[in-house]
Length: 338
Image 1 (tube, rainbow, N blue to C red):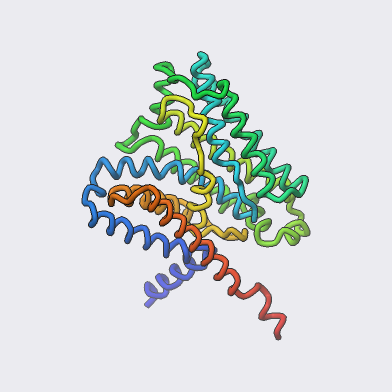
Image 2: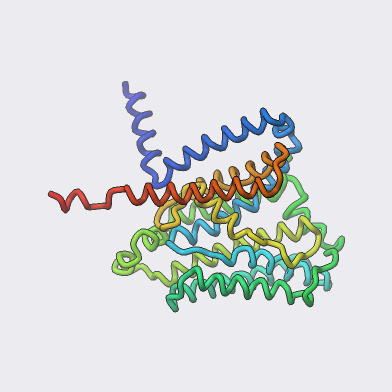
């Protein structure tokens, strides 16, 4: 009897976590997708494909985490894709000029974080709508990516960057590509930061009710800057994986990745209206996104069809969120009716 009550209590605690209901739903959807694609093409479950799939999921996890932080505050970051391109081009250009790869990584990371700080100040400090502010920085970051090497893609970053390439893309630890491990470590760090710290609670507070957060003493400007810095940091890391993968810098690196970031977040249950979502859901959303791309490719679907299917799923996810949030009873509403 006690064991049954304990199980019921545990189930209630899990379901009471904000956004966990949708996370469990999309997790079931992920399992179904894998089974369907495995039936269509058994090669989907081959060791080689699973390894590559985990590596494909990693960039979506990284950018999804950054975008989730921003979305939870009720904002959005459209500059993610361009910051990826900026990261790729700046680091690759420096490496081709003989700069130590890890020094290039550090300098590039600082430059990308500056973009994050700028985003935060524009949105919170100057009250510029996030769509407009990050649209502007998106263009600026892409411009920096283009002029970094004189409006040309870079040459090969060379053998001197072999350690860099192995660390971010080609190397393996325990039989799994490092790219995936990097994404998991980042997830663990930022999930703890979001769910277990005072700043994490402030992030949810700002997204739930910004005026109430201000009255409670929360520095909305500081919180907004922090989430955009997290987003820029994740985009920079993704840029390094792109550079390590190609062995060169490409000016168009990161194109459309801002859409991928939103997709991973909203599919995983992060609300576009702010104040709701957990990073575990983002990981599942990133996995669904990667599995769809990989599975549809194995199924022989043209790129155009893949894009249409994935775009429809994103729209449906957002619509479900809006409908559910619209029907949800307002806190304290029942008290007022008494």
